[in-house]
Image (cartoon, rainbow, N blue to C red):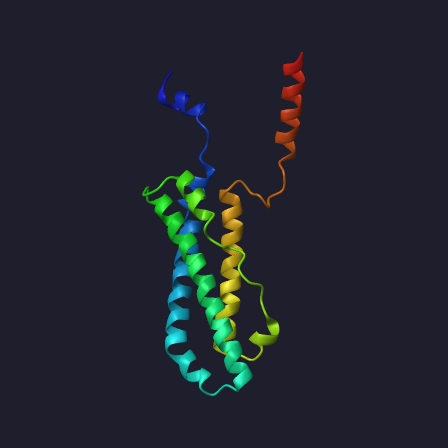
Length: 167
């Protein structure tokens, strides 16, 4: 038996392949760029823009900036965890355990509050929800697709296998 034959009976590590993919690398760069942009905005232009807001809009700005920061911290944590897997620093199993500490659902959008915010803040919030959706899809794929459709062929094969094993 040569090396090629011995690999045939090894399971394919799809999660590790997805994490090492160019798609993940692009998602990682996009996520980290958004974290940096949001931090720069909130510390600079956002702070200046918030001075001109009405009392109600200022309260909405404070709450939405906190939600944005929290959402982005959770997403960055997920991205960094997956990068650690891709770089061989931790195992997929460890990442899956640590992943349980990360909230990828977060708080739902609040259109009424967001309407009171400066345009750039609204854009950052929208981009953060887009990133959150992309990461949730990637995460589901890595974990075996909790939200993915069941594999009809695999379930039929399982039924056939159990039927033959009984005889």
